Length: 315
Image 1 (cartoon, rainbow, N blue to C red):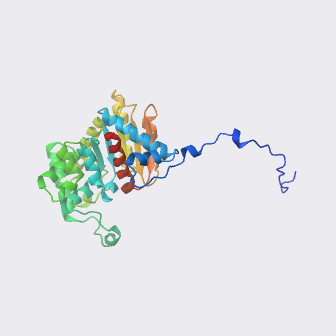
Image 2 (image 1 turned 180 degrees about the horizontal axis):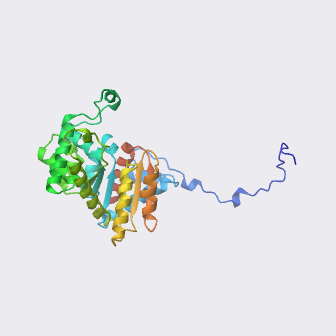
Image 3 (image 1 turned 60 degrees about the vertical axis):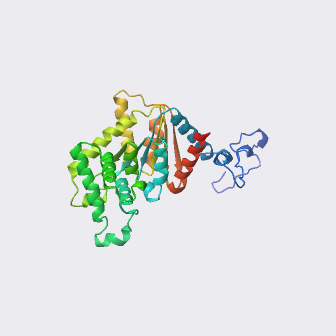
């Protein structure tokens, strides 16, 4: 047969579709919802495929952890704050569903600005050319003063920020994760990479204080991770820093003899990134539990998560 000669299909072997296994059937198609449908109806209407199966299963696992008195720890990037989700997270803290929060350095910057003036997130493109990006005086002074006070008191960065905001009694403290967590006595840990946050370029920045308070928080975070057996860890919107922090904390506590094998993890983000998939979803649950990955906009996925979980807990 020459290289240019066409293949003859007349001898191709076929079989009956009735005898073939199929991965998709009409039984697991989505069900249309009518007006007035409940949240439970919504979950039950999802197609029995991929996230349509995994999301309700994940909700059930979180509900079981909460009802069993286990920890549900959340690690968050700053974008969760910037898209306006603080009230949803605070509500879950007040209901004792979320038991701890881990933030990166940008998280405390945006949360502090929300507390102080009720707005955050400058237009970087319009000010970067003039060298004014990140130069808001009040932001740098507030965050760096709180960090310095935390270093003096030998407390972690998260608690130092919450205490500072609470004492300042800023007009929008009710919208601040840090202030709410301090009021509710819920631990917040802050994990800083020096040079990544605008407050690090301000004259009031103290590298020693930043390093001391964030290291104290890393050890506190390790304590939180040591109690995750039967609980859950959710990584929301952090592609690099918090997944790395979580993996190092997990290996440290396992090395010290703490049993953290059977628990639930999940990653929520706009895109699928390597580190969250590897360091949060896959590796930590290799010896037990289960990891999930849900891709979508935070401003849609997190309210959906909260609504479904609270509805499940109310049953």
